[in-house]
Length: 228
Image (cartoon, rainbow, N blue to C red):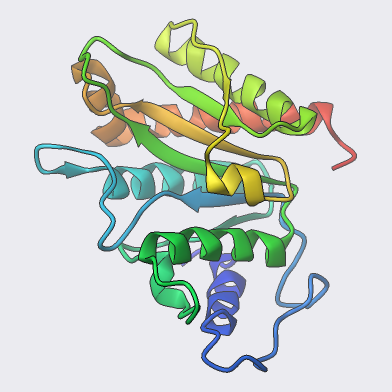
């Protein structure tokens, strides 16, 4: 297990919230070294996300996120990942006043980010369209200029990989983008409904190439925003 997963797993234990007075680690706790990138792995557990036949988005997200985690570590970034297996993040808390499992899941993702205080957060997802010709990666961002810059940097890298000319878009209705305090983007890594994209999303070698494109975009952003 990558070493930097251990602090995050410890953090998740604190988030059970069964006891309202349970200690919450501060941002300068020795368990929580400064996080450069928090990888948010979309869906998980009962929430499979979109699908194509037996292929589930939650599984592809995790595979791509693991590649991205590895590549960013190789580039000497401090990286955290909020899901390392097939489970719902809503299972890590009880939030008694929140009845919606989906809402609990989203709140948990936001809370992890608020405790870790990463420089940026990148949420990994897979797209789907009724039109099977739809292809390529698309990046959604917050209203903030920093989030836009991060999205544009990743989008350029994905467009080069896919040979597409997609533009970024503001994710006005997305909870994570609206609630996250750090620059955050949602990266739709490709269309599971497109044959060519689906191969890229599922072949281990091509998965790593795809993750490397996202990592390149992140690195370009970090290099132009050294103060973060």
